[in-house]
Length: 515
Image (tube, rainbow, N blue to C red; front, side):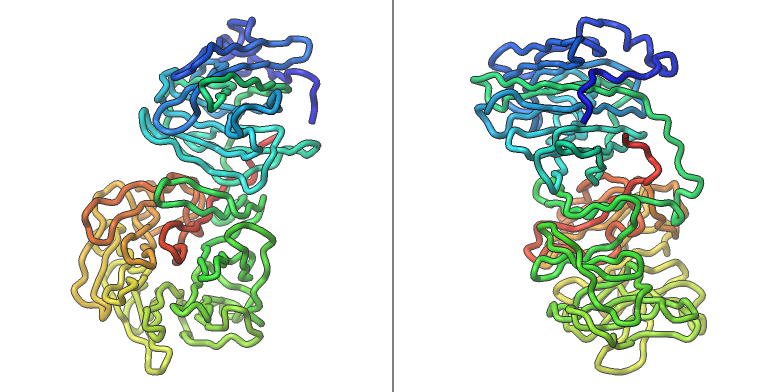
């Protein structure tokens, strides 16, 4: 990577150009200062010849609900921007979790909302953020270690990151966070010793700070080229980890197997990858090579159910095969004139539920069901609105689904026989889709779209939330995380067997510039 000093940009083209010229004694930043709980005074020295910043800091940490660190900052109007730098610690360090990175911060308060891309002393790299003043910090961890160059990018309220190890070009790390930092932000370089009894030093070089002028692609929907990131989130602390990332390639809808494999669809095929990360492997589905994002695993973990539209009529049909793959998947649900999309497998292992429209019964999509042991399909849940995304609870007593029957897309439930439907989520601020239940039956997670979409739509490439609620109704739903995602993020069951984590996919427009 280049070490030729600071690469700059045409100041006259930036709305905050005047601000960048101020306080030249700290390079291109306005000032530097200690923030929060620090045991020793920090400092920042700009070397104009080398084009580098040597920052020294004490500080207890960048984490939790308050921070202690040294910050080299510039205050600018909030807008699309990027900041990149090579980062190197000086010396062995007293604590393996000393942190150096790039930060966008709402204020200089020690409990301010912020987002950063941070290199740890032990080589771990993560994106961290605090959603609001005084709230807890969350993070996404990279699935590799020892990055040398880091980049943080803000586009609207979404923040992305890119990383490079020594001798490699910048590449997107995958995953994104969303948070509102207000009309003005502080942008700069951050260092914390993670130990208030000592100071640590890091050198930031080849610093590039610039505005981004991003225009969404002409077709931001299904036709847009995207990067895809397979992630897992821990429901106990909201922290996320990247499992797999592909630039310019769309994949969707992970399932989580009993032996800790994630199963997802990409390009019409079905893949598996270890939750710990690794190289994805194709699962053999025989002649079926147009699989969509409605697939799942049987309650006993031995079979895979898929929705595929390889037939010339392009209708989605449902097939079952061994989870290890098969040359000849078995057709279990099909209709001569309309589509069928799998969503639910009853814990008895026999009854499957799916979304389908049967013109001879109704002109809208409803929840249909069929017993694998035999018999005709039947409508399990129906209404004048769209009914979709069915899932049976682990005890088999209820079927949950999303429905627009009330005029808003909300989560509903009915008895397992389809009787006594009742609404479960409320409010007019979101469109709620795809309820999924933890294996222990305690939690429901679902995806919430906002009201900028049609009531019956669940498009890709949108700002969305994953929300979680206890199934006993003791608390209202809360936001688990915010991200750029949508269709393909969490269409199907994706809970870990131990009920502590959920797998999902986040996205980013591939056209957004990173280097």
